[in-house]
Amino acid sequence: MKYFLKIFLLFFIVSCASNPENSKANKYLSAKNNKPLEKIIDKNISKSVDLFPIPSTSQEAPNKIYDLPAPKQFFSSDNKNELRLHRLGEIRWIYLSSEPSKSWPMLQEYIINDKNYDLGDADPSSGEITTKEFERNSVKNKFLFKIERGLQRESTEIFISHLVLKDNNWLKSTDDPEFVKTFSTNLLEGISKMGTVSGTSLIALNLNSKNKTEVFKDINGFSKIRLMVSFPRAWTATQRSLKIANLNVTDFDRDLGTFFVNMKTSDGFFSNSNLNIKILVEKINENESIISVAMDEMDLELIDEIISQINQVLT
Image (tube, helix red, strand yellow):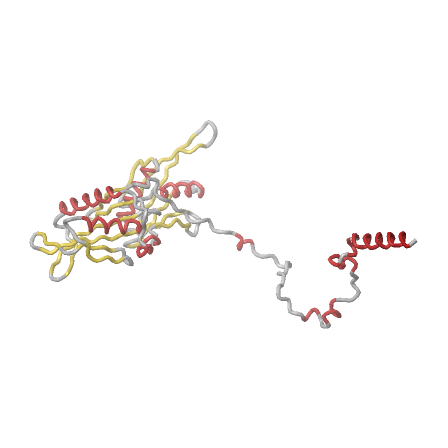
């Protein structure tokens, strides 16, 4: 009898232990809601402070807050080893397809290794580097280099100025163009022989952030390009960009700041049409210009596409 009693007790204990409802973790399953919340917290629930309030859904939020602006267009130079010498009137500059912080040590290294010149002052905050004074034609001379970010990302423009000392003032000289031309050509060849530089100058990193171009929309929603350069520079850059983008320029008027472009578009499977488009370059002030598009039928999407093509190859 005792043997059967022990078996019964063991079976009862095991069954109780194996029942999930008897587990302490599941005691909440058998709990009963006998008291209202006001009595449990012993206060008026309407006066309690809600530390994590849920916004009311009775008033709809305006849809405008969910309209995210399109990201700005940025383009890098397609040719990572591109190196060119430009001239616009008396202005000469070298274009490099690398960031200013990488071009800065390259220019310094060239001057240091050049047997004819010595490195003078270097100010990374302004992007200016000078050579030390040297004698030429019985006059003190030096070169001033201004390093700026190009019209595209990952590009640099090194502007070259020849200065002479007159009446204790350093003035820009235009009397010896062949000398400046030879120097600029030698500088271009010297930098090209350095190859690709992987290092960067930490003190010149601020030069990378100074944008010269910006794609924006006017109050009517039309895309335009703002260039922080003079009108002659903006005109030349636009002319070159239209050629690279294979936009057919049929005529132009520099005085009016207008390029006339003919573009073929597809109206259907079997038909094409020609659009006459005006690319406008407008002077805003001495160092600011705007590029815009004018069409007979104002098509926002097509204007966006044309502006994007110009901005992509703008140099």
